[in-house]
Amino acid sequence: MFPDNFSKSQSFNLAGALIFTGVLQWFLIVLAAETLFPSYSIRANDLSDLASTVAPHAAPLQPSALLFNGATFLVGLLVLISAMLIYRARDNGLFSRIFSALFSFSGLFAMGVGVFPGDTGVIHGLMAMGWFVTAPLSAIAISRRASGAFAYFSAAIGVFALIVLLSAVFAGQSSPFLALGRGGEERLIAFPVLLWMAALSGQLMSPSNG
Image 1: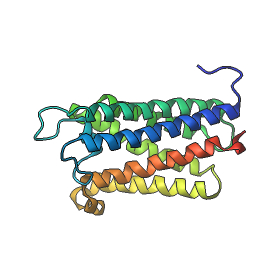
Image 2: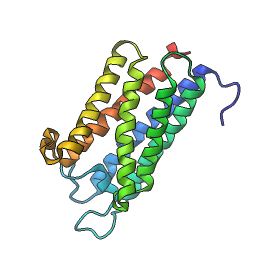
Image 3: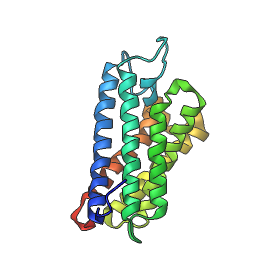
C-alpha cells in the first residue's frame, strides 16, 4: 500500500497530517450539520441524532445526516490509514503494537458509526460503544511510552473519557454528567479524545520523529 522507500519520518508525518485533517473536517462538518438540523440541541440530542430519525421527523434530515455520516466515516478511514503507517514505522519507542491495534480498531468503529446510523439499532450501538472504548484506550496506551506533558494529558484524557462512559452505562439517569444533558454527556466522551488525536498529530509531525 505504501512505497517501500517510505521512511519512518515520512510515515509519521503523513500519519499526523491525515489525523489532523480527519479531526478538523469532522469538527467543521459536524458543526455545519448541527446548524442545519432544525431545533437541534447539543444538550438534549446525541451526536448520532444528526444522522437518524428523531421525532417528530419521519426520516433522517438532509443534509445533516449525509454530512455527519460522511465526516464520521472519513475520520475513521484516515485514522485507520494512519494506524497502518504508524505500525509500519514503529519501533520499541512511542508507538507500540498495542497502540497501533487499538487505534486501528477505533478507526474501524468510527467508520461503522458512519455506515450504520442511530436508527439502524443494535449495530449502531455496538459501533459507537466500540469507538468510545478503543479511542480512550489508545490514549492510555500511548501515555505509557510517551514523555513530557503529552504523556500526562494522554492518560488523563483516556481515563476521563472512560469514567464518563462507565458512568453513562452503569449509573444511567444517576450519572452526574447528565447535568449537561444527554448530548453534553456524550460529548464529554468524544470531544476530549478527538482533541487528543489533534495533539497526537502534532507529535507525529514533529521533527523529533525524523
